[in-house]
Amino acid sequence: MSAKLGRTLCVALSGLDGRIVDVEAHISAQLPHFSVTGLPDKACGQAPDRVRSAAATSGFPLPPQRITVNLSPASIPKQGTGFDVAIALAVLGAAGVVDARRISRVVHLGELGLDGTVRGVRGILPAVLAAARSGMRHVVVPPVNLAEAQLVDGVTVHSAPDLATLVGWYAVRGGVDPLPVALPVRGESEGARRHVDLGDVVGQPEARLAVELAATGEHHLLMNGPPGVGKTMLAERLVTILPPLTREQALQTHAIRSLTGDEIRASELDLTPPFVAPHHSASIASITGGGSGVVLPGAISRAHCGVLFLDEAGEFKTSVLQQLRQPLESGEVTIARARQLVSLPARFQLVLATNPCPCGRAWGKGVDCSCSALELRSYQAKLSGPLVDRVDIQVVVPPVASAAFAEERGETSAAVLDRVLAARGAQRERWSEHGWPTNARVPGHVLRRRPWRLPASVTGAVDRALDLGQLTLRGYDRTLRLAWSSADLFGRSVPTSEDVGLAYTMRSQGRAAA
Picture 1 (spheres, rainbow, N blue to C red):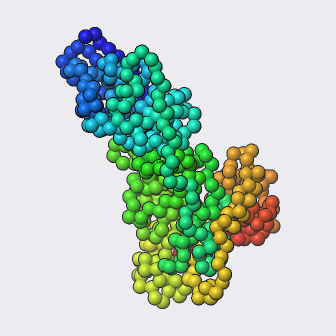
Picture 2 (spheres, rainbow, N blue to C red):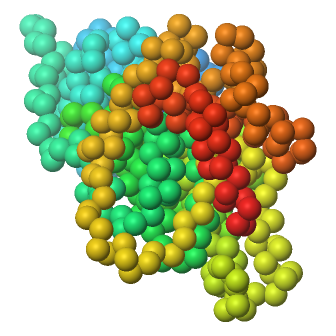
């Protein structure tokens, strides 16, 4: 038997970035052996055993000869079991079981079971996005991943339950039938916003205003107060007053979910900003991303375009908190490995909630507090310095008095969202030609120079605070950004001294109590 070749396509992922991979199979009349080359990881390198068994149980045993599969370009790492289907079809194409020409321009994704079933894998959505960007027009995915694959425009998605079905599609015969197109998935809708409302919060007018300002300008928020006063409730309701995601943002957040293995059940994009609240025992890798072998997104990437909430922030390890500093500035996190450098998006709003001390009773005069001075100082030191200086709004959330029960229900999330959307519209109109979507993204030097520099009569309070060392230059810039958000929220075209005063108070209040 002369040597034969088969070829099809797959996708290799590095974070959210994907690259088309040529899966080439060569069969020669030599001693039986099945090898995969092209930098496969351990899971990918075990594909020959799965493919040989799947092909045999599907009724298409592989020839007892030397089979060599190359994943090209061979210089980039190939990770995971998603190459199984492509490897199997390339080999069957080389063996003459399927039409090698028909499989050569189709991207195949999925893992094979020993019985020939096509099983789901992580990262289908970013892989299909990469295929579409590369000009591919046909993609075959596992049935369990069909819904997320159908989120991508410009590509025809097909799905097969097993290898035998795929062989039936591509079998060598006279006519060339088109691949059957998968029907749209009608799963349960994921587009509903969280079933919480800002109107559920009792009292706390200052904290509610802080949350509204945070949503208005995309500002980070720190809430300091004793246990049980509503800090977590406020944080959870922030996403209900954030503008819905754009299609591009939603595709990114869904792609990150796909990488982490979250099942996407509906073929309609969920435009609700994500809300991620890791436990205070979380490790650095679980927060920033990483892992041995395959690099997976961490909490900061899963919160991309949404909210990262750190409840009991003082209980997090200092090393974990310090890892947030660079992503807060750059909007992405870069994870270095020996053979690759993976960049993941991490543009999130940080919300911190902390107690005044470990026991939580160092409030007011603090007579009930049982913490020593050393414990108090150590607890507060975790949220001081460079990290807190990057948080625009730092407010106190006091205990709720019984008189608040007599008040009518507070404004609903829908009413607040209308104001936030109007304020975001003003920001887009002001900054759109510069490419900044919100006030929080505006570089500080822009607000300190003409034509955006505010008169000294307006910025007098923060100018003095800067001269006295009560504000850093970063803090000064963030105060100005918050003042512009205050003006947008209250319908003013330019911040007044009241807006600057509110911004300075909102920034310094929580730190003074800490």
